[in-house]
Image 1 (cartoon, rainbow, N blue to C red):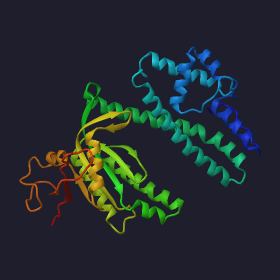
Image 2: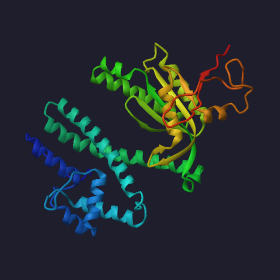
Image 3: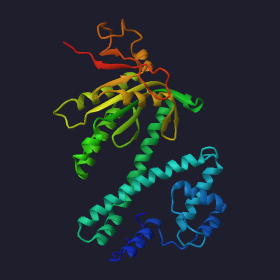
Image 4: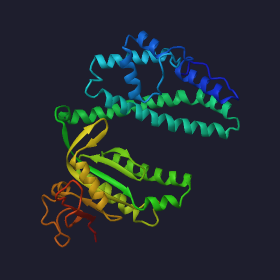
Length: 344
């Protein structure tokens, strides 16, 4: 990307947008979608399907909106379909996930760059300069991060090759939810709210990764993560609720629910009754508490003398069995509240 000439500065937003598009695509658009499909040797209906799944804007057959880079990208996509990387049964979901991920990343990066450009006093010139100096570095860094995650994922796969042959794997699934998010968000301005949520997501992600877990997704006031070891899941959840209960810690008050059992992993997400149970337990948890299901409790108390607060056990945790948790989709969801065991 760095080899292309920088987009010229312009006072007209439309001119600047066209110049930036040409810079990012490698040249000004000169092709229609029909021409792109023909040059790539791909049926037009397949090309349109892939573009829709990627979330690209709709264009008519006579719209000149494509460049040679689109031809190469379409040819590469067709190659992946031919060699089975994008099989028909999962092509749509995989490509949609790919498109959504990059769309969110691009929107965030564009907003960031535009904000910096405005601070320069001349947005057009500032954005031009940033496109030249920043984007090549961002592109290189994105490739590095992607390869690092590939290496990590490959390592996990080699440790547990059963995921290649079995549709389900046993994991601990945990939701961590900010308490009073709606009320708190009303008392903060936009910048303060972003900083508050960022701190929650960053600190939670750091703790999860340090315990060999994986953050599946963040949903504003909630983080969903998985980890193979239920003890690690409990440790993470109790650490976060403990921080939230500390008045001197800026980390928000949270609650958590953990379930352990079979989980279906697909395209970076997780599905199944274990995930649903963790979500229901989180909704039932009181502020500052952690609720777990029978899968977590049984795995961590198999060698203990007892289950209740007044029976010591061997772990660093105390357990209190709750009455049946009312949860949609579950006839009887067993639940325990887990707390750190006080030490003398």
